[in-house]
Length: 113
Length: 409
Image (cartoon, rainbow over all chains, first blue to last red; front, top):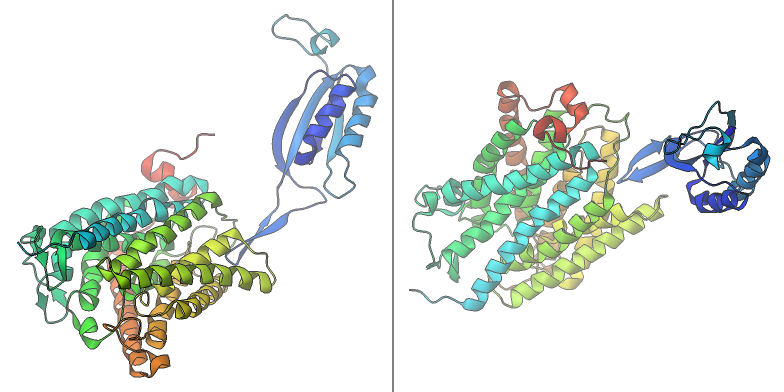
């Protein structure tokens, strides 16, 4: 089993969710996060006082999926999250040792279907 | 019983409620939104507790010091202590046709908002217990005498200084005291290094809007009658606020920034401050000039603050101090007896002497408020301590001073 963690622009979330469900992903966890990469921050001005905001708001999506779904899911994210402008985010893929559905004790691929 | 004018009385009582609304919730929303979320309750609490303290203080000894029988042009005596002799009967020396108690409570609301305005200068770092003592001392030794000088039969009113609704008494006094307070309190931890952004601008703009509405009570109510002069003050007030909101917005836009909501709202407040001393003495067209001047000058002052490095956290000096000074001087420029035969002509209407009188009033108010506030805060700093400890400041007013928090997520 694999885990995809994708950091994306917040306003692309709906497109990414639709693209992932379209390729057969049946669940995901989404969190609002902050961070910076090459995009860096921006400045805000309040009555002449300028502040640099380093951490920009992003959305992190976590998806667990069987290995055979991985490449189509990654493609779906790339297609739906890409704007071509700096700050589009990153995709991380890791291997997951075990998944257990708490309600039924099902394990492995059974637990994420 | 002397004749009571029901129209005037209804207007004064209504305006008293409008002026209270400027402090709660107007000012506390304006200020509460500008601080960081860990200080929102403590900031609101300061305004609320001023309402409590000054309501009692004014009844017991504040009103008699400000408006009681004159002692040497400087202060009222204690004949009206605890409102002794102040009742439903009008006092024609102050205002005819309106119950003396109605005039008293109208003035109470001015006495409340003035110290509440100062709280913006030491936002996010004041020790609550000392703050309570400060408010009582400041209102007794600074506000009450000043109020007496201008409106209570004291020397400044006798000299002919024009202050329709409190440009000197309320705005210069609070603005200049705020400068003294910012200096004595010192900057917040991390000022100039950490981002100290407003945590809720919609709060602040609701607050500024309530100030705008409440200001009709403040200025038009200062006609002390439901008459033509009240209508003049109402129109000049709205006109100046509108002009200043636009002036601030276009100035920041034209000088390389974006037109900001906080800028437009702050500009409106700056315009309201500027027109306050002039409201019943100038024409609506003059009010446009006064508003534009207030918007541009206060914008420049707030921008300058960042370079001067003192931490008047919520710009009390830049808005109320600078706007108040401009308004008082502008009254000496634009006042016209065609608008109000009980007033005077200003420089632009052939009477340059009025500008000098206004200047003397401004200078005296500035010196008195600045020195008086320095002395009071100096004593309190040496005895009770003005500031939170570093840990408390980091924790925020809400948890360290009140053990509660505004937001639970």
